[in-house]
Length: 139
Ligand code: SF4
Ligand code: SF4
Figure 1 (tube, protein in one colour):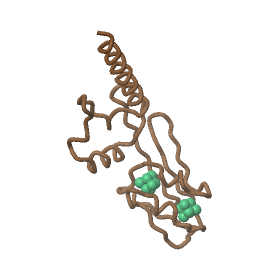
Figure 2 (tube, helix red, strand yellow):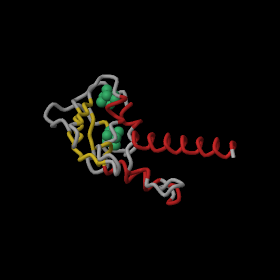
Figure 3 (cartoon, rainbow, N blue to C red):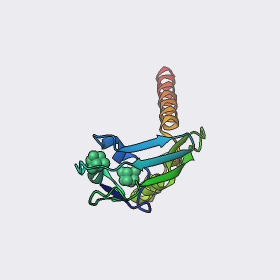
Figure 4 (cartoon, helix red, strand yellow):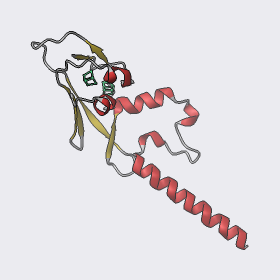
């Protein structure tokens, strides 16, 4: 079965996405994300392999050990305020990227902006650039 080091877990839910037996249950309730690991005998190792935090270990099956559970508050997007990621996930991205890549060429702190807002901003910029190019061609 799986043992979880809650201090290393990022709350990224990669493990629950890859588990073929649905033994890892992730629940997002808007403001919070909880992960619950049911006792598993399969020991396929997939969750360990895909865990970026190296938070998981295989230990012998034991009915008396409580099933692990961790919870995280979800962080709000700086633009739309929708909650989209855990703080440890965002810190991990920030710690692995060089400082000059943490903001885009417009100075936007993109890591702290949700994927939907990022897509909208990029679409708006692309449209503006296209309009600008066309108006230059006409001039
Ligand atoms: S070892 Fe395999 S079956 Fe068990 S929780 Fe991990 S991914 Fe799921
Ligand atoms: S993959 Fe690892 S870091 Fe991500 S939620 Fe699962 S245990 Fe936590």
